[in-house]
Amino acid sequence: MGWRLTLRPYLLIVPALLLTCGILYPFGLGLYYTLFDFSASTPQPDMVRFENYATVFTQEAFWNSAWVTVLYAVGAAATETVLGVAVALLLHRSSLVGRILEKILILPLMIAPVIAAIMWKLMLQPSVGVVNHLLKPFGLGGVQWTDTPTGALLSSIAVDVWVYTPFVAILALAGLRSLPTSPFEAAAVDGAGWWYTFRRLTLPMLWPYVLVAVIFRFMDSLKVFDIIYALTEGGPGDSTVVLQIRAYLEAIRFQRYSFGISYTVVLWAVVYLAAMVLVKRLGKIQRKAAEVK
Amino acid sequence: MTYRKSLLGWLADAALILYFVFALFPIAWMVILSLKPTNQLFSTYFSFSPTLDGYRAVLGGSEGVPFVRFFINSLVVSVGAVALSLVVGLPAAYASARYRFKGSDNLMFTLLSFRFAPELTVIIPLFVLYQKLGLFDTYVGMVWVLQLVTLPLIVWIMRSYFADLTPELEQAALLDGYTRKQAFFRVALPLVKPGIAAVSLLAFIFAWNNFVFPLILTSSEAQTVTVGALSFLGGDRPKYNLTAAAALVSVVPPLLLALTIQRYLVRGLSFGAVKS
Image (cartoon, rainbow over all chains, first blue to last red; front, side, top):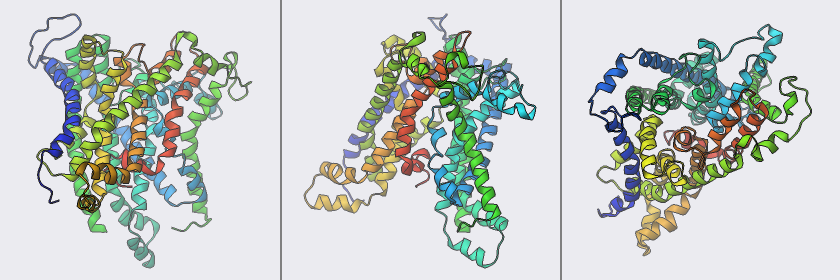
Protein backbone atom coordinates (compact mmCIF):
# COMPACT_ATOMS: atom_id res chain seq x y z
CA MET A 1 0.00 0.00 0.00
CA GLY A 2 2.98 2.28 0.50
CA TRP A 3 1.29 4.80 2.77
CA ARG A 4 3.14 6.19 5.74
CA LEU A 5 2.26 4.46 8.95
CA THR A 6 0.34 6.98 11.00
CA LEU A 7 -2.04 7.05 13.87
CA ARG A 8 -4.90 7.43 11.43
CA PRO A 9 -6.08 3.80 11.22
CA TYR A 10 -6.22 3.65 14.98
CA LEU A 11 -8.17 6.89 15.18
CA LEU A 12 -10.64 5.59 12.60
CA ILE A 13 -11.39 2.47 14.57
CA VAL A 14 -11.52 4.10 18.01
CA PRO A 15 -15.30 4.68 17.91
CA ALA A 16 -15.95 1.11 16.82
CA LEU A 17 -13.49 -0.08 19.44
CA LEU A 18 -15.26 1.87 22.18
CA LEU A 19 -18.60 0.50 21.10
CA THR A 20 -17.15 -3.01 20.96
CA CYS A 21 -15.80 -2.55 24.48
CA GLY A 22 -19.24 -1.39 25.57
CA ILE A 23 -20.58 -4.69 24.29
CA LEU A 24 -17.62 -6.68 25.60
CA TYR A 25 -18.12 -5.34 29.11
CA PRO A 26 -21.42 -7.12 29.74
CA PHE A 27 -19.90 -10.29 28.25
CA GLY A 28 -17.03 -10.04 30.72
CA LEU A 29 -19.44 -9.22 33.50
CA GLY A 30 -21.48 -12.29 32.58
CA LEU A 31 -18.41 -14.53 32.73
CA TYR A 32 -17.53 -12.97 36.08
CA TYR A 33 -21.03 -13.60 37.42
CA THR A 34 -20.76 -17.31 36.64
CA LEU A 35 -18.10 -17.59 39.36
CA PHE A 36 -20.62 -16.43 41.99
CA ASP A 37 -23.92 -17.73 43.26
CA PHE A 38 -25.70 -14.60 42.09
CA SER A 39 -29.51 -14.69 42.02
CA ALA A 40 -32.44 -12.46 42.97
CA SER A 41 -32.47 -14.06 46.43
CA THR A 42 -28.74 -13.51 47.08
CA PRO A 43 -28.07 -9.79 46.69
CA GLN A 44 -24.70 -10.37 48.39
CA PRO A 45 -23.38 -13.23 46.24
CA ASP A 46 -20.50 -15.45 47.35
CA MET A 47 -17.61 -16.58 45.23
CA VAL A 48 -18.19 -20.22 44.31
CA ARG A 49 -15.48 -20.56 41.64
CA PHE A 50 -16.53 -23.25 39.15
CA GLU A 51 -19.33 -24.73 41.18
CA ASN A 52 -21.99 -23.45 38.76
CA TYR A 53 -20.34 -25.30 35.89
CA ALA A 54 -19.95 -28.42 37.99
CA THR A 55 -23.67 -28.24 38.79
CA VAL A 56 -24.55 -27.75 35.11
CA PHE A 57 -22.66 -30.85 34.03
CA THR A 58 -24.11 -33.06 36.75
CA GLN A 59 -27.71 -32.04 36.04
CA GLU A 60 -29.88 -34.41 34.11
CA ALA A 61 -31.72 -31.36 32.78
CA PHE A 62 -28.54 -30.12 31.12
CA TRP A 63 -27.88 -33.37 29.28
CA ASN A 64 -31.49 -33.51 28.19
CA SER A 65 -31.23 -29.95 26.87
CA ALA A 66 -27.93 -30.63 25.16
CA TRP A 67 -29.42 -33.68 23.45
CA VAL A 68 -32.53 -31.79 22.31
CA THR A 69 -30.36 -28.91 21.04
CA VAL A 70 -28.14 -31.21 18.99
CA LEU A 71 -31.15 -33.08 17.57
CA TYR A 72 -32.75 -29.79 16.62
CA ALA A 73 -29.62 -28.33 15.05
CA VAL A 74 -28.69 -31.45 13.08
CA GLY A 75 -32.28 -32.00 11.95
CA ALA A 76 -32.80 -28.40 10.89
CA ALA A 77 -29.40 -27.88 9.22
CA ALA A 78 -29.52 -31.21 7.35
CA THR A 79 -33.07 -30.71 6.07
CA GLU A 80 -32.37 -27.13 5.04
CA THR A 81 -29.22 -28.17 3.19
CA VAL A 82 -30.90 -30.90 1.14
CA LEU A 83 -34.04 -28.88 0.46
CA GLY A 84 -32.13 -25.64 -0.19
CA VAL A 85 -29.74 -27.24 -2.69
CA ALA A 86 -32.65 -28.99 -4.42
CA VAL A 87 -34.55 -25.69 -4.75
CA ALA A 88 -31.39 -23.98 -6.05
CA LEU A 89 -30.82 -26.69 -8.68
CA LEU A 90 -34.44 -26.44 -9.81
CA LEU A 91 -34.27 -22.65 -10.02
CA HIS A 92 -30.98 -22.86 -11.88
CA ARG A 93 -32.75 -24.66 -14.76
CA SER A 94 -34.31 -21.21 -15.26
CA SER A 95 -37.71 -22.13 -16.61
CA LEU A 96 -40.37 -19.46 -16.81
CA VAL A 97 -41.94 -20.74 -13.60
CA GLY A 98 -38.55 -20.64 -11.88
CA ARG A 99 -37.89 -17.05 -12.88
CA ILE A 100 -41.22 -15.93 -11.46
CA LEU A 101 -40.80 -17.88 -8.23
CA GLU A 102 -37.22 -16.78 -7.64
CA LYS A 103 -38.45 -13.26 -6.95
CA ILE A 104 -40.41 -14.42 -3.92
CA LEU A 105 -37.92 -16.99 -2.65
CA ILE A 106 -36.67 -14.76 0.17
CA LEU A 107 -40.03 -13.89 1.71
CA PRO A 108 -39.98 -16.44 4.56
CA LEU A 109 -36.39 -15.53 5.39
CA MET A 110 -37.32 -11.91 6.03
CA ILE A 111 -40.13 -12.75 8.44
CA ALA A 112 -39.08 -12.66 12.09
CA PRO A 113 -38.66 -16.26 13.26
CA VAL A 114 -40.89 -15.55 16.24
CA ILE A 115 -43.68 -14.38 13.91
CA ALA A 116 -43.19 -17.45 11.73
CA ALA A 117 -43.56 -19.62 14.83
CA ILE A 118 -46.78 -17.79 15.76
CA MET A 119 -48.14 -18.42 12.25
CA TRP A 120 -47.38 -22.12 12.42
CA LYS A 121 -48.75 -22.34 15.93
CA LEU A 122 -52.10 -21.11 14.64
CA MET A 123 -51.96 -23.53 11.72
CA LEU A 124 -50.96 -26.57 13.76
CA GLN A 125 -53.68 -26.35 16.44
CA PRO A 126 -54.96 -29.95 16.58
CA SER A 127 -58.70 -29.22 16.68
CA VAL A 128 -59.10 -25.96 14.75
CA GLY A 129 -55.81 -25.61 12.87
CA VAL A 130 -55.88 -25.54 9.09
CA VAL A 131 -53.17 -28.19 8.68
CA ASN A 132 -55.25 -30.94 10.23
CA HIS A 133 -58.27 -29.69 8.30
CA LEU A 134 -56.35 -30.11 5.04
CA LEU A 135 -55.12 -33.56 6.13
CA LYS A 136 -58.64 -34.84 6.92
CA PRO A 137 -59.21 -36.30 3.43
CA PHE A 138 -56.09 -38.43 4.00
CA GLY A 139 -57.42 -39.76 7.29
CA LEU A 140 -54.94 -37.72 9.35
CA GLY A 141 -57.27 -35.14 10.85
CA GLY A 142 -56.24 -35.51 14.47
CA VAL A 143 -52.45 -35.24 14.58
CA GLN A 144 -51.32 -33.76 17.93
CA TRP A 145 -48.57 -31.65 16.35
CA THR A 146 -47.17 -29.71 19.29
CA ASP A 147 -48.69 -31.76 22.12
CA THR A 148 -46.44 -34.81 21.91
CA PRO A 149 -42.66 -34.74 22.59
CA THR A 150 -41.66 -36.01 19.15
CA GLY A 151 -44.31 -33.95 17.37
CA ALA A 152 -43.25 -30.76 19.15
CA LEU A 153 -39.60 -31.22 18.20
CA LEU A 154 -40.47 -32.05 14.59
CA SER A 155 -42.87 -29.09 14.39
CA SER A 156 -40.25 -26.66 15.64
CA ILE A 157 -37.71 -28.05 13.17
CA ALA A 158 -40.34 -27.61 10.44
CA VAL A 159 -40.70 -23.91 11.31
CA ASP A 160 -36.91 -23.53 11.21
CA VAL A 161 -36.89 -25.25 7.80
CA TRP A 162 -39.69 -23.00 6.57
CA VAL A 163 -37.83 -19.83 7.59
CA TYR A 164 -34.26 -20.73 6.64
CA THR A 165 -34.39 -22.99 3.57
CA PRO A 166 -34.31 -19.86 1.32
CA PHE A 167 -31.03 -18.89 2.99
CA VAL A 168 -29.33 -22.09 1.83
CA ALA A 169 -31.07 -21.89 -1.54
CA ILE A 170 -29.88 -18.30 -2.18
CA LEU A 171 -26.25 -19.09 -1.36
CA ALA A 172 -26.34 -22.33 -3.37
CA LEU A 173 -27.91 -20.53 -6.33
CA ALA A 174 -25.21 -17.84 -6.20
CA GLY A 175 -22.67 -20.65 -6.23
CA LEU A 176 -24.27 -22.40 -9.20
CA ARG A 177 -24.30 -19.16 -11.18
CA SER A 178 -20.62 -18.52 -10.56
CA LEU A 179 -19.43 -21.97 -11.66
CA PRO A 180 -17.21 -22.02 -14.76
CA THR A 181 -19.02 -23.31 -17.88
CA SER A 182 -16.13 -25.04 -19.68
CA PRO A 183 -16.04 -28.27 -17.61
CA PHE A 184 -19.77 -28.71 -18.23
CA GLU A 185 -19.39 -28.13 -21.95
CA ALA A 186 -16.57 -30.68 -22.04
CA ALA A 187 -18.69 -33.20 -20.13
CA ALA A 188 -21.58 -32.65 -22.56
CA VAL A 189 -19.29 -33.22 -25.53
CA ASP A 190 -18.09 -36.47 -23.92
CA GLY A 191 -21.73 -37.50 -23.56
CA ALA A 192 -21.66 -37.61 -19.77
CA GLY A 193 -25.02 -38.33 -18.16
CA TRP A 194 -26.88 -35.96 -15.86
CA TRP A 195 -26.06 -37.92 -12.72
CA TYR A 196 -22.37 -38.21 -13.55
CA THR A 197 -22.11 -34.48 -14.25
CA PHE A 198 -23.87 -33.69 -10.99
CA ARG A 199 -21.74 -36.04 -8.86
CA ARG A 200 -18.39 -35.29 -10.47
CA LEU A 201 -18.65 -31.63 -11.41
CA THR A 202 -21.56 -29.69 -9.93
CA LEU A 203 -21.45 -31.01 -6.39
CA PRO A 204 -17.68 -30.75 -5.70
CA MET A 205 -17.53 -27.21 -7.09
CA LEU A 206 -20.73 -26.18 -5.33
CA TRP A 207 -19.78 -27.59 -1.92
CA PRO A 208 -17.78 -24.56 -0.69
CA TYR A 209 -20.85 -22.32 -1.15
CA VAL A 210 -23.19 -24.83 0.41
CA LEU A 211 -20.86 -25.44 3.33
CA VAL A 212 -20.75 -21.72 4.16
CA ALA A 213 -24.53 -21.86 4.37
CA VAL A 214 -24.46 -25.06 6.43
CA ILE A 215 -21.97 -23.57 8.90
CA PHE A 216 -24.16 -20.51 9.43
CA ARG A 217 -27.31 -22.60 9.79
CA PHE A 218 -25.77 -25.15 12.15
CA MET A 219 -24.33 -22.43 14.42
CA ASP A 220 -27.56 -20.49 14.54
CA SER A 221 -29.81 -23.47 15.15
CA LEU A 222 -27.64 -24.55 18.09
CA LYS A 223 -28.58 -21.16 19.54
CA VAL A 224 -32.27 -21.35 18.67
CA PHE A 225 -34.57 -19.41 20.98
CA ASP A 226 -37.34 -17.46 19.22
CA ILE A 227 -38.98 -20.34 17.39
CA ILE A 228 -39.13 -22.65 20.41
CA TYR A 229 -40.23 -19.86 22.74
CA ALA A 230 -43.22 -18.94 20.60
CA LEU A 231 -44.18 -22.44 19.43
CA THR A 232 -43.79 -24.69 22.48
CA GLU A 233 -42.06 -22.73 25.30
CA GLY A 234 -39.94 -25.86 25.71
CA GLY A 235 -42.90 -28.20 26.22
CA PRO A 236 -44.60 -30.57 26.39
CA GLY A 237 -42.72 -31.51 29.56
CA ASP A 238 -39.15 -30.61 28.71
CA SER A 239 -39.08 -32.25 25.30
CA THR A 240 -38.10 -29.09 23.41
CA VAL A 241 -36.15 -27.23 26.10
CA VAL A 242 -33.07 -26.32 24.06
CA LEU A 243 -30.09 -24.82 25.89
CA GLN A 244 -30.99 -21.16 25.36
CA ILE A 245 -34.56 -21.77 26.56
CA ARG A 246 -33.17 -23.54 29.63
CA ALA A 247 -30.86 -20.58 30.27
CA TYR A 248 -33.83 -18.22 29.91
CA LEU A 249 -35.94 -20.19 32.38
CA GLU A 250 -33.09 -20.35 34.90
CA ALA A 251 -32.08 -16.70 34.67
CA ILE A 252 -35.32 -14.86 33.96
CA ARG A 253 -38.10 -17.12 35.30
CA PHE A 254 -36.30 -18.43 38.40
CA GLN A 255 -33.92 -15.44 38.62
CA ARG A 256 -30.83 -17.60 39.13
CA TYR A 257 -28.65 -15.28 37.04
CA SER A 258 -25.27 -16.94 37.53
CA PHE A 259 -26.60 -20.37 36.80
CA GLY A 260 -28.44 -19.23 33.66
CA ILE A 261 -25.32 -17.54 32.27
CA SER A 262 -23.29 -20.69 33.00
CA TYR A 263 -25.62 -22.57 30.68
CA THR A 264 -25.03 -20.09 27.87
CA VAL A 265 -21.25 -20.13 28.36
CA VAL A 266 -21.24 -23.91 27.93
CA LEU A 267 -23.36 -23.49 24.79
CA TRP A 268 -20.95 -20.83 23.51
CA ALA A 269 -18.04 -23.24 23.92
CA VAL A 270 -19.95 -25.90 21.98
CA VAL A 271 -20.79 -23.48 19.15
CA TYR A 272 -17.19 -22.32 19.00
CA LEU A 273 -15.83 -25.85 18.79
CA ALA A 274 -18.34 -26.73 16.09
CA ALA A 275 -17.30 -23.58 14.20
CA MET A 276 -13.63 -24.49 14.37
CA VAL A 277 -14.22 -28.02 13.06
CA LEU A 278 -16.52 -26.88 10.26
CA VAL A 279 -14.28 -24.01 9.12
CA LYS A 280 -11.34 -26.43 8.91
CA ARG A 281 -13.46 -28.72 6.71
CA LEU A 282 -14.41 -25.72 4.61
CA GLY A 283 -10.76 -24.99 3.90
CA LYS A 284 -10.17 -28.58 2.78
CA ILE A 285 -13.25 -28.58 0.58
CA GLN A 286 -12.33 -25.25 -1.01
CA ARG A 287 -8.93 -26.63 -1.98
CA LYS A 288 -10.60 -29.69 -3.48
CA ALA A 289 -13.05 -27.55 -5.44
CA ALA A 290 -10.15 -25.53 -6.82
CA GLU A 291 -8.63 -28.76 -8.15
CA VAL A 292 -11.84 -29.69 -9.98
CA LYS A 293 -11.86 -26.32 -11.68
CA MET B 1 -28.70 -25.28 -19.62
CA THR B 2 -31.29 -24.51 -22.20
CA TYR B 3 -34.85 -25.14 -21.18
CA ARG B 4 -36.81 -27.72 -23.13
CA LYS B 5 -40.42 -28.56 -22.48
CA SER B 6 -39.57 -32.13 -21.66
CA LEU B 7 -41.23 -34.40 -19.13
CA LEU B 8 -38.33 -33.73 -16.80
CA GLY B 9 -38.88 -30.01 -17.23
CA TRP B 10 -42.53 -30.34 -16.24
CA LEU B 11 -41.57 -32.43 -13.21
CA ALA B 12 -38.99 -29.88 -12.13
CA ASP B 13 -41.56 -27.09 -12.38
CA ALA B 14 -44.08 -29.17 -10.43
CA ALA B 15 -41.53 -29.79 -7.66
CA LEU B 16 -40.72 -26.08 -7.50
CA ILE B 17 -44.38 -25.14 -7.30
CA LEU B 18 -44.82 -27.68 -4.50
CA TYR B 19 -42.03 -26.06 -2.48
CA PHE B 20 -43.45 -22.59 -3.05
CA VAL B 21 -46.90 -23.71 -1.90
CA PHE B 22 -45.22 -24.78 1.35
CA ALA B 23 -43.35 -21.47 1.50
CA LEU B 24 -46.27 -19.18 0.76
CA PHE B 25 -49.29 -20.96 2.24
CA PRO B 26 -48.66 -19.80 5.84
CA ILE B 27 -48.54 -16.17 4.70
CA ALA B 28 -51.73 -16.59 2.66
CA TRP B 29 -53.40 -18.31 5.59
CA MET B 30 -52.51 -15.41 7.88
CA VAL B 31 -54.19 -13.05 5.43
CA ILE B 32 -57.33 -15.21 5.51
CA LEU B 33 -57.32 -15.51 9.31
CA SER B 34 -56.78 -11.79 9.79
CA LEU B 35 -59.81 -10.99 7.62
CA LYS B 36 -62.16 -13.36 9.47
CA PRO B 37 -64.83 -12.04 11.81
CA THR B 38 -64.47 -13.39 15.34
CA ASN B 39 -67.64 -15.49 15.19
CA GLN B 40 -66.43 -17.40 12.12
CA LEU B 41 -62.94 -18.16 13.40
CA PHE B 42 -63.53 -21.80 14.20
CA SER B 43 -66.70 -22.60 12.29
CA THR B 44 -65.35 -22.38 8.75
CA TYR B 45 -62.01 -22.58 6.99
CA PHE B 46 -62.19 -21.09 3.52
CA SER B 47 -65.67 -19.59 3.36
CA PHE B 48 -66.29 -16.49 5.44
CA SER B 49 -67.38 -12.88 5.11
CA PRO B 50 -64.16 -10.82 5.13
CA THR B 51 -63.90 -7.87 7.48
CA LEU B 52 -61.20 -5.45 8.52
CA ASP B 53 -62.31 -5.61 12.15
CA GLY B 54 -59.21 -7.58 13.12
CA TYR B 55 -56.95 -4.82 11.84
CA ARG B 56 -59.11 -2.14 13.42
CA ALA B 57 -58.90 -3.90 16.75
CA VAL B 58 -55.12 -4.34 16.58
CA LEU B 59 -54.40 -0.78 15.45
CA GLY B 60 -57.03 0.61 17.81
CA GLY B 61 -55.27 -0.87 20.82
CA SER B 62 -57.88 -3.44 21.78
CA GLU B 63 -57.10 -6.00 24.51
CA GLY B 64 -55.05 -3.22 26.11
CA VAL B 65 -52.20 -3.83 23.66
CA PRO B 66 -50.81 -0.52 22.30
CA PHE B 67 -49.71 -2.11 19.04
CA VAL B 68 -49.18 1.12 17.10
CA ARG B 69 -46.84 2.23 19.82
CA PHE B 70 -44.88 -1.03 19.56
CA PHE B 71 -44.65 -0.46 15.82
CA ILE B 72 -43.20 3.02 16.32
CA ASN B 73 -40.80 1.61 18.95
CA SER B 74 -39.58 -0.98 16.47
CA LEU B 75 -38.98 1.76 13.91
CA VAL B 76 -37.12 4.02 16.33
CA VAL B 77 -34.78 1.40 17.76
CA SER B 78 -34.05 -0.23 14.40
CA VAL B 79 -33.26 3.07 12.67
CA GLY B 80 -31.26 4.22 15.70
CA ALA B 81 -29.23 1.02 15.79
CA VAL B 82 -28.41 1.16 12.08
CA ALA B 83 -27.48 4.86 12.23
CA LEU B 84 -25.12 4.36 15.16
CA SER B 85 -23.52 1.35 13.50
CA LEU B 86 -22.96 3.31 10.28
CA VAL B 87 -21.35 6.27 12.03
CA VAL B 88 -18.81 4.15 13.91
CA GLY B 89 -18.69 1.19 11.53
CA LEU B 90 -17.90 2.82 8.19
CA PRO B 91 -14.58 4.41 9.28
CA ALA B 92 -13.59 1.15 10.97
CA ALA B 93 -14.45 -0.89 7.88
CA TYR B 94 -12.48 1.51 5.68
CA ALA B 95 -9.45 1.48 7.98
CA SER B 96 -9.36 -2.30 8.18
CA ALA B 97 -9.66 -2.64 4.39
CA ARG B 98 -7.02 -0.02 3.56
CA TYR B 99 -4.42 -0.27 6.27
CA ARG B 100 -2.54 -3.22 7.60
CA PHE B 101 -2.09 -2.45 11.24
CA LYS B 102 -1.38 -4.41 14.37
CA GLY B 103 -4.42 -6.22 15.63
CA SER B 104 -6.71 -5.36 12.72
CA ASP B 105 -7.46 -8.99 11.96
CA ASN B 106 -7.91 -9.74 15.62
CA LEU B 107 -10.37 -6.90 16.00
CA MET B 108 -12.30 -8.05 12.96
CA PHE B 109 -12.42 -11.60 14.23
CA THR B 110 -13.61 -10.42 17.63
CA LEU B 111 -16.46 -8.62 15.89
CA LEU B 112 -17.30 -11.75 13.91
CA SER B 113 -17.09 -14.05 16.91
CA PHE B 114 -20.08 -12.26 18.40
CA ARG B 115 -22.02 -14.22 15.83
CA PHE B 116 -21.11 -17.39 17.70
CA ALA B 117 -22.15 -16.16 21.13
CA PRO B 118 -25.58 -17.12 22.42
CA GLU B 119 -27.57 -13.90 22.86
CA LEU B 120 -28.39 -14.72 26.46
CA THR B 121 -24.73 -14.69 27.50
CA VAL B 122 -24.82 -10.92 27.12
CA ILE B 123 -28.49 -10.25 27.80
CA ILE B 124 -28.70 -11.74 31.28
CA PRO B 125 -25.89 -9.53 32.64
CA LEU B 126 -27.38 -6.59 30.73
CA PHE B 127 -30.75 -7.31 32.33
CA VAL B 128 -29.11 -6.84 35.75
CA LEU B 129 -26.94 -3.92 34.60
CA TYR B 130 -29.73 -2.02 32.82
CA GLN B 131 -31.89 -2.05 35.91
CA LYS B 132 -29.05 -0.47 37.88
CA LEU B 133 -28.29 2.11 35.18
CA GLY B 134 -31.90 2.97 34.41
CA LEU B 135 -31.53 1.73 30.81
CA PHE B 136 -34.11 -1.04 31.21
CA ASP B 137 -37.08 -0.54 28.88
CA THR B 138 -35.55 2.51 27.14
CA TYR B 139 -34.73 3.36 23.51
CA VAL B 140 -31.09 4.01 24.40
CA GLY B 141 -30.74 0.60 26.00
CA MET B 142 -32.27 -1.13 22.98
CA VAL B 143 -30.19 0.79 20.41
CA TRP B 144 -27.08 -0.07 22.39
CA VAL B 145 -27.72 -3.79 22.63
CA LEU B 146 -28.80 -4.00 18.97
CA GLN B 147 -25.23 -3.08 18.04
CA LEU B 148 -24.53 -6.76 18.60
CA VAL B 149 -26.69 -7.44 15.56
CA THR B 150 -25.99 -4.45 13.31
CA LEU B 151 -22.35 -3.49 13.91
CA PRO B 152 -20.59 -6.75 12.97
CA LEU B 153 -22.78 -7.03 9.87
CA ILE B 154 -22.09 -3.48 8.68
CA VAL B 155 -18.34 -3.50 9.44
CA TRP B 156 -17.79 -6.93 7.95
CA ILE B 157 -19.70 -6.37 4.71
CA MET B 158 -18.48 -2.81 4.12
CA ARG B 159 -14.94 -4.00 4.67
CA SER B 160 -15.34 -6.38 1.75
CA TYR B 161 -16.82 -3.59 -0.42
CA PHE B 162 -13.95 -1.21 0.40
CA ALA B 163 -11.41 -3.98 -0.21
CA ASP B 164 -12.89 -4.48 -3.70
CA LEU B 165 -12.29 -0.82 -4.63
CA THR B 166 -8.98 -0.26 -6.33
CA PRO B 167 -6.83 2.03 -4.14
CA GLU B 168 -5.56 3.78 -7.32
CA LEU B 169 -8.63 6.01 -7.43
CA GLU B 170 -7.98 7.37 -3.96
CA GLN B 171 -4.26 7.65 -4.66
CA ALA B 172 -5.02 9.68 -7.77
CA ALA B 173 -7.22 11.93 -5.66
CA LEU B 174 -4.38 12.37 -3.19
CA LEU B 175 -2.03 13.37 -6.02
CA ASP B 176 -4.62 15.94 -7.07
CA GLY B 177 -4.16 17.54 -3.70
CA TYR B 178 -7.08 15.98 -1.81
CA THR B 179 -6.53 15.22 1.85
CA ARG B 180 -7.08 11.63 2.94
CA LYS B 181 -10.33 12.67 4.56
CA GLN B 182 -11.58 14.21 1.30
CA ALA B 183 -10.44 11.13 -0.63
CA PHE B 184 -12.55 8.97 1.68
CA PHE B 185 -15.64 11.17 1.57
CA ARG B 186 -15.53 12.21 -2.09
CA VAL B 187 -14.04 9.16 -3.79
CA ALA B 188 -14.38 5.99 -1.72
CA LEU B 189 -17.76 6.55 -0.08
CA PRO B 190 -19.73 7.49 -3.23
CA LEU B 191 -18.39 4.37 -4.97
CA VAL B 192 -19.71 2.02 -2.30
CA LYS B 193 -23.04 3.81 -1.88
CA PRO B 194 -25.11 0.90 -3.23
CA GLY B 195 -23.37 -1.39 -0.78
CA ILE B 196 -24.06 0.97 2.10
CA ALA B 197 -27.72 1.23 1.17
CA ALA B 198 -28.13 -2.53 0.91
CA VAL B 199 -26.28 -3.39 4.10
CA SER B 200 -28.18 -0.71 6.03
CA LEU B 201 -31.50 -2.13 4.92
CA LEU B 202 -30.40 -5.67 5.77
CA ALA B 203 -29.18 -4.54 9.19
CA PHE B 204 -32.50 -2.75 9.69
CA ILE B 205 -34.39 -5.96 8.88
CA PHE B 206 -32.33 -7.98 11.36
CA ALA B 207 -32.78 -5.35 14.06
CA TRP B 208 -36.52 -5.17 13.39
CA ASN B 209 -36.90 -8.96 13.52
CA ASN B 210 -34.97 -9.33 16.75
CA PHE B 211 -37.01 -10.84 19.53
CA VAL B 212 -34.88 -11.93 22.45
CA PHE B 213 -33.45 -8.46 23.28
CA PRO B 214 -36.79 -6.66 23.63
CA LEU B 215 -38.30 -9.74 25.33
CA ILE B 216 -35.85 -9.46 28.20
CA LEU B 217 -34.72 -5.84 28.18
CA THR B 218 -38.06 -4.06 27.72
CA SER B 219 -41.42 -4.36 29.45
CA SER B 220 -43.83 -1.78 28.05
CA GLU B 221 -42.33 1.62 27.16
CA ALA B 222 -39.84 0.37 24.55
CA GLN B 223 -41.44 -2.96 23.67
CA THR B 224 -41.35 -3.86 19.98
CA VAL B 225 -43.75 -5.59 17.58
CA THR B 226 -42.05 -8.98 17.75
CA VAL B 227 -42.84 -9.21 21.46
CA GLY B 228 -46.16 -7.40 21.10
CA ALA B 229 -47.45 -9.87 18.52
CA LEU B 230 -47.46 -12.56 21.21
CA SER B 231 -49.84 -10.57 23.43
CA PHE B 232 -52.96 -11.61 21.53
CA LEU B 233 -52.28 -15.31 22.06
CA GLY B 234 -52.83 -15.23 25.80
CA GLY B 235 -56.10 -15.77 27.62
CA ASP B 236 -58.50 -18.67 27.46
CA ARG B 237 -60.02 -17.54 24.16
CA PRO B 238 -57.05 -16.80 21.93
CA LYS B 239 -57.84 -14.12 19.34
CA TYR B 240 -56.57 -15.86 16.25
CA ASN B 241 -57.71 -13.13 13.87
CA LEU B 242 -56.02 -10.41 15.93
CA THR B 243 -52.83 -12.46 16.21
CA ALA B 244 -52.79 -12.95 12.45
CA ALA B 245 -53.42 -9.24 11.81
CA ALA B 246 -50.67 -8.25 14.25
CA ALA B 247 -48.27 -10.75 12.67
CA LEU B 248 -48.97 -9.38 9.19
CA VAL B 249 -48.63 -5.74 10.20
CA SER B 250 -45.27 -6.51 11.79
CA VAL B 251 -43.84 -8.26 8.72
CA VAL B 252 -44.74 -5.53 6.23
CA PRO B 253 -41.63 -3.33 6.67
CA PRO B 254 -39.02 -6.11 6.46
CA LEU B 255 -40.75 -7.72 3.48
CA LEU B 256 -40.97 -4.46 1.52
CA LEU B 257 -37.31 -3.65 2.20
CA ALA B 258 -36.21 -7.18 1.37
CA LEU B 259 -37.69 -6.96 -2.10
CA THR B 260 -35.64 -3.83 -2.80
CA ILE B 261 -32.26 -5.34 -1.85
CA GLN B 262 -32.52 -8.74 -3.48
CA ARG B 263 -29.45 -8.21 -5.64
CA TYR B 264 -27.21 -7.59 -2.65
CA LEU B 265 -28.54 -10.30 -0.41
CA VAL B 266 -25.95 -12.98 -1.02
CA ARG B 267 -23.00 -11.03 0.29
CA GLY B 268 -25.00 -9.66 3.17
CA LEU B 269 -26.45 -12.96 4.30
CA SER B 270 -23.17 -14.81 4.14
CA PHE B 271 -21.24 -12.03 5.91
CA GLY B 272 -19.20 -11.47 2.77
CA ALA B 273 -18.05 -15.11 2.73
CA VAL B 274 -19.70 -15.55 -0.67
CA LYS B 275 -19.48 -12.64 -3.11
CA SER B 276 -22.49 -12.14 -5.33
